[in-house]
Length: 396
Length: 157
Image 1 (cartoon, rainbow over the protein chains, first blue to last red):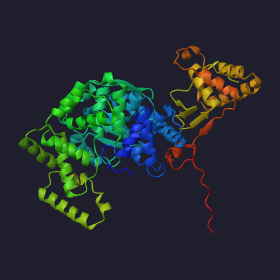
Image 2: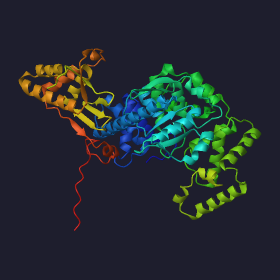
Image 3: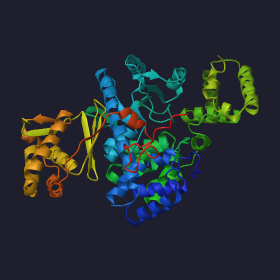
Image 4: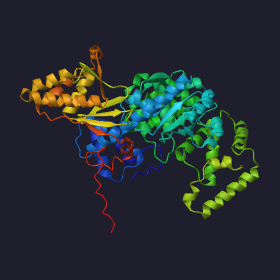
């Protein structure tokens, strides 16, 4: 039904759903009819589309659409509203804890978008809280969260993630997920300073507790860069987030800053592709000069490779040897500030040594060959259990 | 008897929103979920905006003098239930409600009085279970949180 295979860009029917959820008048009505005619509501609603249904209900309801599906959509809206409020309440407790410990926080993604952009607690369902802290506070924050019963997931990733990653995940007893970030994006960690995003952060409150959010421009930048990654559950809601953000706050978008960030963090391919998509498919007004300038930047080999990898593999766990090596290489390239073939690849060797714990390359090679053999002889589903970090763990 | 002239929503523990004539309320401390519709939603919206519960009754009975006693008694009982559930709390200061939010809750209240139906507090206390319900497949035609009636299994012979 939805053959977009995890792509960040919606399939044709997902696009109709997004239009029904975002547009008004005849355009909304046409999209709604098309979408409804093509889906079996009981069977065809995959997760990415499901997460758009509260916004769909809100948009249809304010345009007085009467339909037999409305009570069901309203129920989904009510459930999203309840879940979000419970998550926000819990988030406020965490923020309060960090505030009291003197740890500066910025809320990213869903919660900030809900409070500051959508200004509606139901239309943007989310599964977790995303908290950004300065990297220097990571150790203190991790200890504090652990002392309050939050359990770190995949703790063996921590060393790697602190050096090359952007975040680590915690869960509490009720399985609520907390993503603790020290970088807002996967890309360009060598190039990002805490001040790049914190300098324009704005005040916000979550369930009565004060914290910060990225400013509107940085929130748009983050929404796009984060959204344009492959995910098994297609992350199509970046389209809604970015569309609503630009349409509600056109005066607050500093396009020069978007271009500056896109160049500095080497994500101009992502930004350019996303803005062109929104402009063409959702009639979102983007200054022509911005599209022209972004389009004129010549991407380097690394920029193309990182973007291609993000769209094709993103967060997917690589299975084959090729996918693993590709992911390893793209993972290095996306965060390094090194330029020029020799500098970049000297850095890559150091990166490999870190990931493989300095074990002999022959051993690593044999490990991967054995994995490859296993993949061919065992069931495919077993292969899926191999994670990218087996490469790091190979020498253990 | 309600001793205070004004009542307010027990924020921040209680969050609420009115959608299409239905007020939904969530007590974040207890996890209890409430739904008020018809007259219940209109009364809730009026008190949330204006605070003056006795004025709400006055407006309703004024609109439907034929059912004055019934309306006054039923609505007061309903408001008491909201207080008992700690969804509303008494306040002495009516100035809290002086800042107008461009709301016009009187119209809904008067409409509710014309074809008066006793307001009901629908309470759902098993929130953890409710949140696990699939809101497409596990609910009836009214939508979440109304779980589908699944007939009990026949005992095996």
